[in-house]
Image 1 (spheres, rainbow, N blue to C red):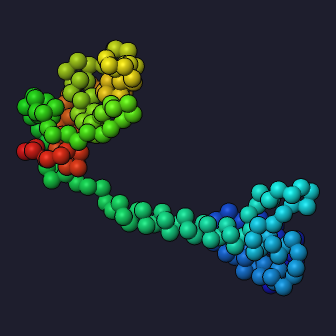
Image 2: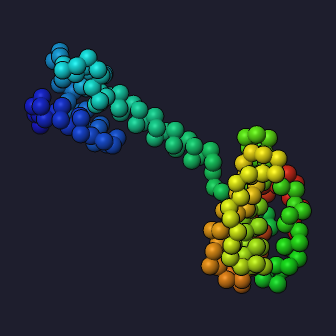
Length: 199
């Protein structure tokens, strides 16, 4: 199938995914033999005749290389991350009666510490999930103001994390909060702790 120059260039510029771009490049290969701006739209960056800035449409082959690179990087990242880490303590079902005993121990676990600006530290998100479910189960909805400043100056990262997690559970009833707490306690990944002493 023969394609004219204007159609080939339009196809190159409108292609926005890998397969469409490959197809447009195959149809426009004849532009390699034709010197000029149209060939540059296939090969490399071209200059707009009206001004000397590089035109916003990057050449087709350059865009294809970039899209293929992004696709392979995303695939490599997905392969490297693997499936989410499963807790060794996860169960098929959970007993809400364990809530009281677990509530007494979750704060004493050896949580990892994450550094924040200004020397502040916070715990992993799993800690704040447990904190929020515990508070919702024992006190109900959060009614306090969101903390801003720490006692020693600077932003109160710890207080804000706790407040945000608890506020997200607004409206959850006590039983559901207890169930979610027990499930979260057993299912959070061991990497959130320096040493996993649950169980």
